[in-house]
Image (cartoon, rainbow, N blue to C red; front, side, top):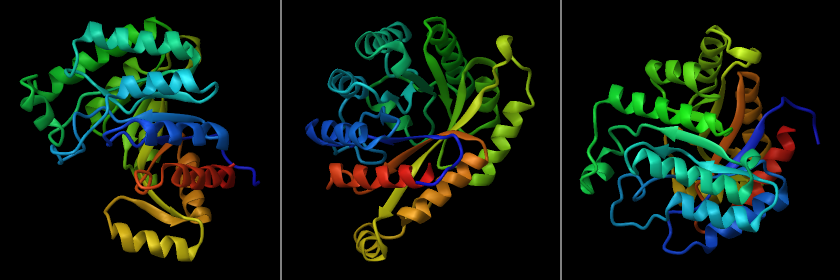
Length: 278
């Protein structure tokens, strides 16, 4: 095992399924294999596919919390407006009561134009971006007041400012190494909070990892070329995550494309990546 930058590595869980067993199997594999955390998407359906199933993030995470002892867990990210703020705070508090506060990351986001259809389909409304970001910022303050680690997810300059002012970290989905480096520098240049803490950057994105070149070729044939996916063998993906860490990422949360078909195998391969990073 090689030495590397201090970065924590997690996986999202396969919750776009009609049953919870793949997600629970993936979580157990993550804990056994040494990953640092497991996360669940907070969507009413898979992006752009309203006919497909999606399990509720907090329900799955509560089941995972009760079945694991070590991994950190949280939604990626809980979107304001899907639940009333008080209910969302209670959901995080309940998860912390099951897992312990130190194991929960209260990651919050505003949603965007790609997820707006979910809100509108259930008549939840979709206020302007500034209003949604103000709601997310206020929610994060409440969650920090309960002693929870908080992230705000998003890519805009306004979201970065909200993370700098209110959260423990900014989560950027699908960011490049250069984007992580820039965001990390901008956060570090802001006002330092009491006790000297500086908000950090966490990264999330899709990955396609082969254990060797032949395995990668098989996966590429099955899933095709997809923009923004970090694809490669175990050493190649580990090199990319290490570059993200060198750019300032404190977490790398990976979403393996193949974990619906093979939840245990995909996560065990990601565990090999984590070992190579460290």
